[in-house]
Image (cartoon, rainbow, N blue to C red; front, side, top):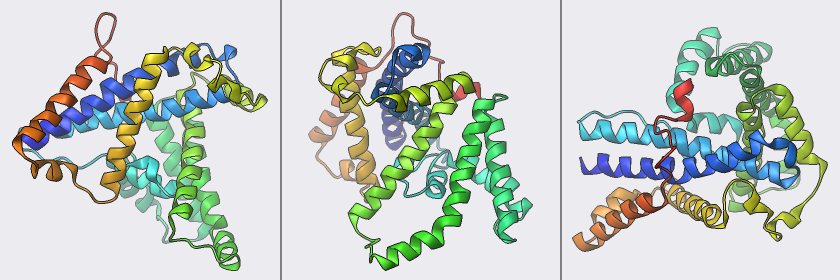
Length: 302
C-alpha cells in the first residue's frame, strides 16, 4: 500500500504540477501561433513534449499505484523515454503497453525483421502509420506516425555509414558525451514530430515550423518575452524547477537507484518530512480550482 501511494503521489506531481502547468503555455502559443516565431515556437514544442509525458506518464503512474494499493501489479508504461539514445530505443521506453502490442500483433505477424530489408522497412512503415491512425482520424497523427517510421528506416539505412565514420575517427561510443549527443538528437527528432501531433491540422503545423526557422531571437531570454506566453514569471520558474526535479529523479532511476527503497532505509522522521513536503508542494503548486476540468487527460480522447 505504501509503495502504491508513493507511486500515486509522484503521478499527481507529474500531472498536476508539471503537465497541467505546461499545458497553459502550450495551449496559449498553439492557439495564438501567428504571434510567435523562432525560439518561442521551439519553447512551446519543448514544453508540449514535457506536457504529454507528464500527463500520460502521470496518469499511468496513478493507475499503476492505485492498482498496487489493491494488490494488483501492472506493467510499467514508461521508462524515461527522453533518455533514449535513438528512435528505436525511444519506442522501447514510451507507451510500452501499446508498443509491445504493435510489436506482437502487427510487426511480427507481418514478418518483423526476419525478411528482406525492403519488407522490413515496409513493416516498420505499416506499424507507425497504424500507430498514427490509432490516435485518431486526423492527418496530423498520420504524419506524426510516418515521421517516426521514417526516422527508424533512415536510421537503419545509415547505420553502416555511421559505424564506419565512428571507426575512422575513433569515436569513443561508450563515453558520456557520445550518449549525451545521441540523447539530444533523439529528443530533437521526437520533439519535432510532436508539433504535428499537437497542431490542429497540417497547415498549422507547417506554418509553425516555418515560423520557428524564420528568425533567430535569443533576446527573448532577456527581455521578459518568456512571460508573455501564457505563464507569468512565478509559474514559469515553478515549471522549470519541477522539470529539474523530474530530470533528477529520472536520472537517478536511470542509474539504477531505487528511490523508494532508499527512502525506506531512512529514519521515520526524515521519511515523513519528505512525504509531507511532497504533498504540500503538490497542494501549493498543482493546477486545480475554479474552471479546471479534472477529467482533462490528453490520452482520454484516444
